[in-house]
Length: 247
View 1 (cartoon, rainbow, N blue to C red):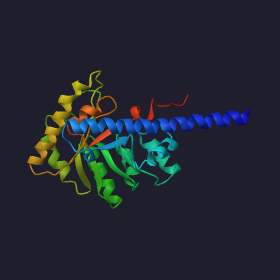
View 2 (cartoon, rainbow, N blue to C red):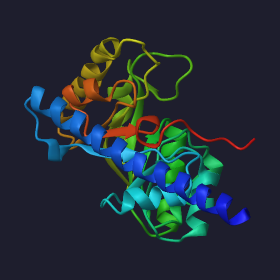
View 3 (cartoon, rainbow, N blue to C red):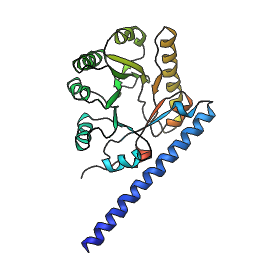
View 4 (tube, helix red, strand yellow):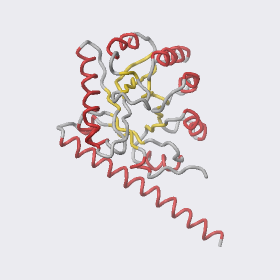
C-alpha cells in the first residue's frame, strides 16, 4: 500500500509539473498576441517566473524549457534555494529590500538584477556592498507611479530631480524602471499608469540617460503592460498556480 501511495504522489507531482509547462506556454502565447497588437517585437519581452513559495522541482521544470531567470521577493527564501542547489539559476530580486539584507545578495554572482531599488538610502547601500564585492550591480528603480500608500517606490513627483544622484553611483548600473500597481479587477484601469511609467523612461532618455528596461505587469494585467512597453513581466500565479503555503 505504501508503494501505491508513493507512486500516486509521483504522478501528482508530475501532473503539476506538466501543468506548469502548459501554463507557461499559454502565458507566452498571450504575450506574443499582445506584442503583435501593439506592433512590438516579442523578443524584446522577457517573462520572469515568480517562484515565491515554489519548490526547486517546479523551477527545474521551467528551466528545462530554457528559462534561466526567476524572481524572488524574500531574501531568505532566495538564499535557501541557492543553498539547496548553488548556481542553478539566475535570481532577480523583486520584493521590498531591507538595507541590512543587501550584503547577502551582493555576494551572489547569480543574483544579477534587483528590480526594487526604492530609496536613495537603499541605492547607497547597494552601491557600497557592490563595491566591497568588486562588482557593478544592475538595478531597476521602483516608482510608486499610482501614488499608492501601500506600495514602496520613489514618488513620481520629484523623481526627475532625484535621479541624477542615483545615476552617479559608480557601482550601480541602472537599467530601467519598475512599478507595482494596486490590484484592479479591470486590467484596463492599469493602462494609464503603465503608459505614465513608459513616458517617465522616455523623459529620462531625452535628458541623456540610457535606460532600456520597464519591469511592469503581473498575472492580472501583464497583457496591458506588454501593450504599453513592458520589457519584463513578473508572472507567478498564472504559471505556477496558486501558491502552496506550509500548514
